Image (tube, rainbow, N blue to C red):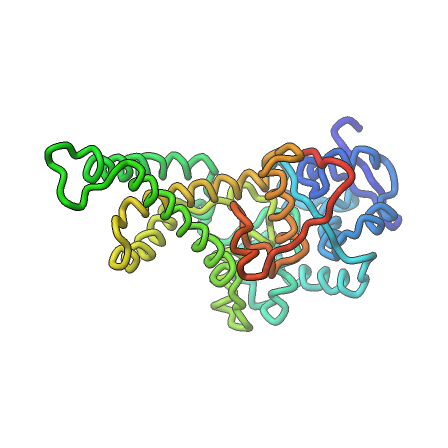
Amino acid sequence: MANSFPVQFAGAHYDIKQFLRDHPGGVNTLKYFKGRNIMAAMEKFGHSSGAYHMLGDFKVETVDVNLTGAVSENGRIITTGEAGRDLKEIAFLEELEARLDWSKPLLYQLDAIAPDYDAWVNSPVYRKCRLFESSILESMTFTPWFLVPLFWIPIILYVGATQFRQYVACGDTCDEDSITAPTYLFHLVFGMGIWTALEYSLHRWVFHINPGKSVTMIKLHFLIHGMHHKVPFDGLRQVFPPIAALVITCIIYLPLQAVLSYPLIKLTGGLIGYLTYDMIHYYVHHGSPKDGSYLYAMKRYHSNHHFVNHDKAFGISSKIWDYVFKTFVKVKRLSFSLQW
């Protein structure tokens, strides 16, 4: 029993040991239910239909080779949800899932759920997701979090230092466009501000674009962001692949450099903002922030986006643009601290 965490629900038995650190409400809210019936608790705390749907991944009567095991180490927070269960909706989600064979690459099967893609992709599961038949292509979809700072920090330091030497610490070689250190810092911070707007814009209007009924657009959306909502517990698919990020950076930078002064300094600031965002995104999924900290608040806020309000709470490193565009979500106040 030490290596299991049995619970009961509606007459069936489940082992949620693997899910303890991933539980959206923290480990401390689950520890009292070992060996007990969790039906009343799930209804009391307002779990969504997706939560009941995902519970099926832990049923002990069947062996699901697609369970992720230790993909991630920490949890997410469900802050609100439907009052009680919608049995028809849960049954519908089960029927949708049954259309797909999770032991085979999903990307080639999405036509089966195309008419109901939005409902399917926003109902998370606790499974591994294979996209491509090719092992080479599949390996390119995995990105360990530490590769992101390893790739971007040298670039940020090089570009930032080069620009500082050219415009600030230039000595006798300074041109008329030289600037002071505070002005350099202003352009750096301005670039970080540009990133916050891009972060919100990309997340809301690109990653959450409605693909309609087009299977091609659905596949594209699933690759870009839908997969993250379907399997939010997969720690190898929660930061942006560096090469893809570099390509996007170049595409965005080219038009901006024509209208911005000291564009490379601002780019440096933007890259600092991006790196901060990607690390925060990974941490709010897998970290264990303490109550009262900024990251604790952002973890709850981002989890609200994943599990309750998919069309709101788009800010990840900051809520500022959610306030501006009225997509801010007020997260429910709790009388206790969540722990992971």
